[in-house]
Image (cartoon, rainbow, N blue to C red):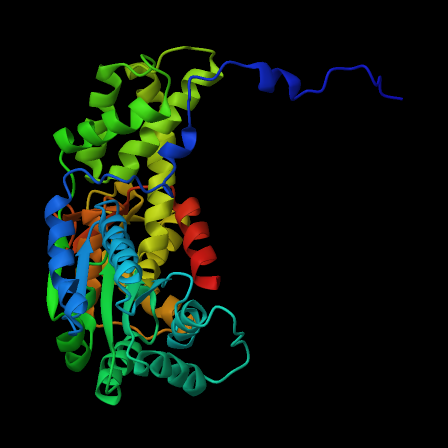
Length: 404
């Protein structure tokens, strides 16, 4: 029988002194009220949507850039302020934010919109045509709708979705529908149908990555509120900023690095976060960021990366004329063949060799693979490719994404 007077194992945790004031301020899901170094983007999106205040339809907007560049935070901030202003002035402007990683088909997107505009109604089981008409009926009452499609490249039938929403304005006598598409994929718009591209990309914005100085200021502001006073050394903030800037210019990477460094300090009962804690947190954060990045990749890029990971796990290398074997190095051509096989297995269309080369360049830019031209010791001219991260973890992460 357990001793009823034995101290609960969590009692010590409750009594432990924490160096954090509020660690939630370092969560990737937290959006701060102030968005430093994004005033230009805030003003630009505000000016694009401003015609709505005068009951005129604005241009559709397509915003893109690397992950962690502030696209979602800026867009939702402007949208929320617009909706607050609309309520105060009774302007009849309504918004719907759709995470397209979750709602990755036209039907699911329209269902999310319908739920936002008719919160008291249940649309499960209704046809796509019925839900589409319900959304149009809402706009026909003189309502101006702003639809934010975050990670729009995840929508499998995106051409059909965008074309339907833009053409809907022809059927609405009073009211309008405006689309803001957000994507991490710089090449996404090039794959759109010309009609879709012209209607979605009426106005385009590129969000640049943050530099080291900007990241340092962002981290300083977060650290002041998330940690107790004097806990985080300035050199630790500088190091975390420099690492994030060098890797990707991703604010989320920098913030996560600071959070993990704080957790390292707490585990060893230290009252300070120094360079040492940041260095120890670096490997853990890199793995988290890479696995998170994989989930944001377009599906075709995921399939190419899956082909590289699968071949890497087979321990194949290339044999040079000298007989020496380079482990983990793959020929571009054999990867394309494996990608073709995997695409068919998942019942996905296979892209052309041109688009395959573009995807390889994109994966290299993200640091997921390393490429080089074949040199001495190898017959013929080709591109040699090597995975830059643990093959099994990448394979498991992609298969989980695709199956989901």
